[in-house]
Length: 407
Image (cartoon, rainbow, N blue to C red; front, side, top):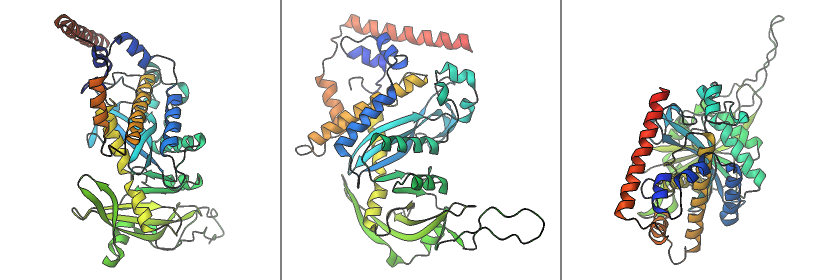
């Protein structure tokens, strides 16, 4: 909280009494404490505060960090949401627990691109545990975190994810198999069926040749964009989704009963197709949910809108909790740092809940400002400041020299 705009270990050491840079570095990069245990404890405390078996949402999303060089764990040229383009950086897959406007991050794991999983020496240098070196898709990492949340006994009634995880039916069927009620965004060209496609394995038509094994359907498929575009204007309903600093957030929404099919199999799943239109831009967001057919459009639309809050949690984590300011390259350091960020974010949510009555508009940045000015700080003389600058330059010089020797 006291580190200013750049909340890294150097800035902390400069302002926090009785701190030492080397001790901080060792604590983050090499100390044997288990980041997963800390995340689990943070998740349990979060669930105690805002968990709800009906209305709380477990939200899946990823966030990215621009990084130079090749040594930082998982760094590669890949799509970075923080840049809106392919660039050099790291990506982490996270889950958050949300109820109403209260949200906190629970678990996170750095994504390892295939080029990392194939490079044993690189994995060793980054101190990646042996059982974590195999390639896993972001979908697989997300599903692992959902299972972990359930195994811990966290209380939530929905699993939400963006269209990056709703690229095809596999992820949706996986959540269905886990008996999770989901609402997952999908791309406009996602294929659905207006009626049960009733897949079947065709009979063998010739005496020779292999017997057919893959299920097929004669039902016509349709893209969600086309299906929604055919709906009459009367199908849309204006729904107030949440309050905001600029007034109520209102969208036009509709839902259509559809089926999705796991192509080649007999598996079909009835779903709600939920569409939400922005009245200003005309842009439409599409989602699929396996919620009960009795679920109201208002409940579906409000669940769809809850994904907004994980984006807010990333913003607060990066702005107030130093999420993007780490100075570590290895696997241990990255996950240690993220576990501490989650602890800080949980603390802020606790404060906002405690003071919600008299201060309903209290933000994470307000809490950061209060702590930065009220916690003890080092009293620096002119000589102290000059010494700090000298040590900054000395550290940078050592890094540059190390990089030069390894090139």
